[in-house]
Length: 456
DNA sequence: GGAACAGTCTCTCTGTAGGT
DNA sequence: ACCTACAGAGAGACTGTTCC
Image 1 (spheres, chains in turn yellow, green, purple):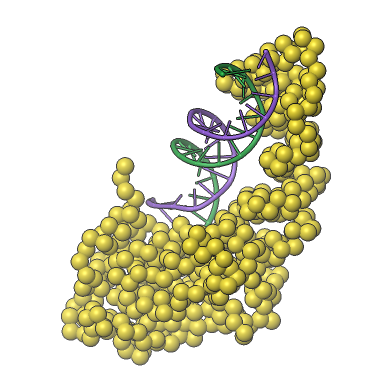
Image 2 (cartoon, chains in turn brown, green, orange; image 1 turned 180 degrees about the horizontal axis):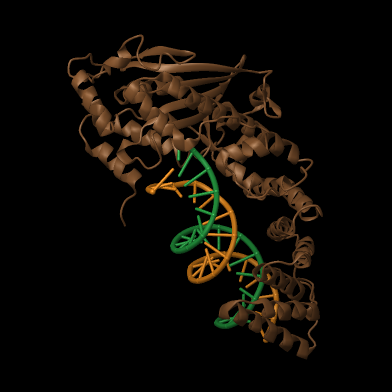
């Protein structure tokens, strides 16, 4: 099987010699002119060339609001600071609510139990002490070796409010400086929060770090990818398309409506234009877009954690109860999971799809807990709600087993087996029900009335 | 005592959706 | 456009229990 382009990129990064020319990672047409300039310009601590354009205090990017030059051992880097004050609104929420996120079990639960990690079973809350939100803007999605992260945005709650620090690449040749500056900023005591970062942001940084021989701290931090938590929570949302894009959830969950926001597809083009012409104003909307993504990510994380905390006692209304049930269930929080599943399954205002899914999850979890009578009641609810034959067949089979083996009601077991056989799809399923029916008939013919094997 | 069964776990496969 | 985590379904292995 052919290796993925990301893997190929990693091989290139490992296989090539020292990154003696910063233009290695540079889209061809832009790098040519830089190489000429670089031939007589200063070098960094590693003897690698520094892009002369950013070495000047008035270099490109510095014209941006809040921008400053940060000097690293590998050249200067453009950094843009911004503060969202705590009392400011972001949709229906206040910015200071982002500061309520705690590094505890509930956050670990949202992360699918991956924050503690195998190496540090009790890392929380005593291990990492900072929570950093991270979002990249890149030169595209399919740029191969030319795909560069030109803007790395980091957001963090501070005493003053939600502070964003954006590391901007003023030219492709300045990448090493940016990578070093980002490493220095992040340190190793943080928990990373991203949106789809496991698939996108972190792998991109890993490749850029390998290409430039600057291993990225961001790749080794404990990581909460909110996309997956959000999907579990809101994918069964009653709203139309069940999309879990950040901009969609930002609107539906937080009530944020962005006006005039730059579209994602437009971002690479703006950056290329900026690199050619040095017009920093082109990047202002991109920087704003990145800051808002960070703020929304933080607000969404805070909201999700609040749901997890409060839902333990009182399940929320609507489809969120089911999503919360899934999160508790995966994390092994049985009682809260049961409460949420039950709440969603019995909520007559919800769609049948959602109630059915909740009833099935409830039945499966109760069965795992060996609470068979309650499980049977949940399977009956699945039948009552109707739906796909496959689901009904599963419920019929579970009830046939329950009545045959646990409560010894053979007639009732046969009734479910007959109905299940009618709904069976495929030869395997039909044969399975036939065997069950034949056995039940034999037992009934003998007049066998057997005691319950297991009870709740 | 071997066969049959229920339940759980793991693995594989497929489809979906998210990032710029 | 490209890549990948995840969910769901199905198959098979395995364990423990009961049937005959």
